[in-house]
Image (cartoon, rainbow, N blue to C red; front, side, top):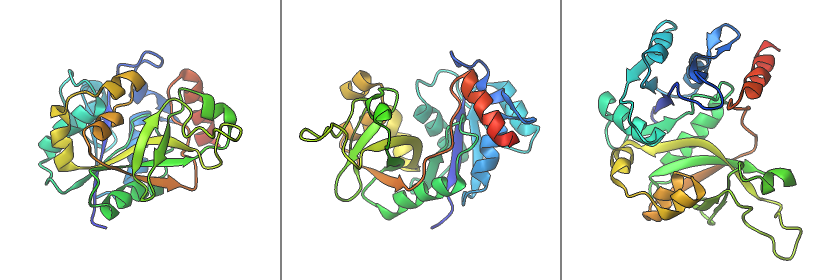
Length: 246
């Protein structure tokens, strides 16, 4: 597979963990740790897209490329679309969106997401899932579930337990949890900000439903492994610090 571009959107605003991208993890800002993990993948370039000069400065201080983007973007995908324009990427180029709060992201999972999109020319996006094993996760609305068709393309994403096993115990053996890692065709990213917001997206608060609502397809890579823990809260940050120190 030809090289792809990793773009990491990063904002300072966070209600649960202020200045999250700059949080220190064993001597490095979190955003730098994420970028370094992404650089271990097959990406041809790794770029941080931010609206905060402090984030750009932290990246520059550690040799990570950063682009300044507008502060009024309503979503990470909109920020990615601006970064695609700044980078001058061709419409058929592949862009992988790595979240800026995933300092333990597996480089192999980034590669698999990009490869899944390359193998599905009828899809504008690809994403990642893994099998759920805990009933508490299946019932948790903060854990996003998804179902796919026989070709491995997403049919729906939901915070509700899907698919619901009517004649069993509720949770089927192969229930899938969505991982927020995305690969896009750059041309679709350019078009994404022009798409009307979907009613389903507003109900579930899941941006990827806009893509399905407009009739586009999302390929899904089912990973045999779970991703490393992300960072949403101070407790998450301490857990990741312990894991990296170990």
